[in-house]
Image 1 (spheres, helix red, strand yellow):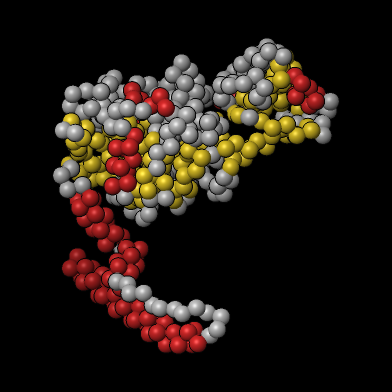
Image 2 (cartoon, rainbow, N blue to C red):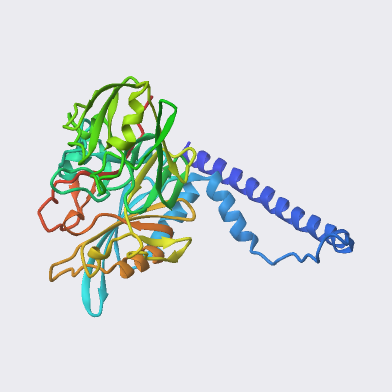
Amino acid sequence: MDTFYFAENYELRKLTEVTINVTIIGILILCQALLPIHASSTKVAKVTVPDFDTSEVKVKIFDQISPELRKKNFDEKIKKQYPKAFIKDVSDGVKHIRMTKYYNGRPVRINLVQVDMNLAKNFELTPVLSSSETLKSRKTITTIAKNNDALVALNGTYFKPQTGVPLGTLMIDGKLYTGPIYDRVAMGIFEDGFDLARVRLDASVKGSGKTIKVDNINQPRMLSTHVLVYTPQWGKYSPTAPKYGVGLQVTDNKITKASANAVEIPQNGYVISGPKSILYALLEKKDVKLSVKTTPEWKGVKHIISGGPYLVKDGEVYVDMTAQKLGAIGGRNPRSAIGFTADNNLILVAVDGREGSSVGMTLMELANLMKSSGCVGAINLDGGGSTVMYVNGQVVNNPQMKGGIPLSNAIILSKIAES
């Protein structure tokens, strides 16, 4: 039975290969036949048919037709890409790669997870918070991973150490938990791929015939003139309003309380905090509506996780550390990064540092590593003491604190929940 099944698949693949070959040849003949017609037209410039390798076209087509071939190609690609590394199969389409590189004769220990998202169809990538109830929480990556049945987990975006509140854009399942800071880069995660951009908030509150710009959501106040919105995920109470400011409690789109002190955040609403001179105009009719968008709009985006700086942009090394106000994270340190390739592979990296057996990486070294791994887009995540990677039930790198420090959030690869 097994032999017959193999032969049947073999014959099917051979038949498909013949069909593809005939189709490619037919297209080439048609292009050649049409060339004189186009060349004689005064509206069309001279056209030439470029030479191309039909075997590459066949590989790409078979890659889509045959999961077995795609798996074989993925295996061979990884072996070729990381020839001196220890490579472990974690699941279909998921590889854990361990290697040591040397920079100026000094060792750097690297843990890398590469995922072919077309092979790992039963898995999804998503940011997660350490708590489903509040932003003000921190847990170890092992706890976060186990609570979310994660196969792979890596520490996520920056956070305020004292509280655990993420610093920067964080969207999970289409819900924006925190807004951007310093126009930093973020990664958009879609149903069928990824994108990078420096994300900006486009939010406003409308009421009493006025439209008031909202500067941020669930983030620490930077200027007393800013208008901020605090949702129930922030906690039970909003911060005290700034000097000459006020907090407006909004319940079911109606202003139900105004106070300069901390205001209770309703479960079915939010608190708007900002200068009285701006917000008092909303008290006239007390009906308000909050609108939250991002720029770019990123239609169809499921999740967003911020970081910074860029490491790879449009296939080239690009480190804009100064532009994103990240000067403090320079030097040689433990590093975490996330990126993606042109053929929809996800790459997660954790670099150990600050020890004799692994001295860490500079951002430029990390950027070059991501590019050499095939990334067309990559960003730096929170690093230093936060760098920790979890694979298949255990922490695989060597963070400064055993098991890793408690984290605010992580990026995880987990099985898609059955509906």
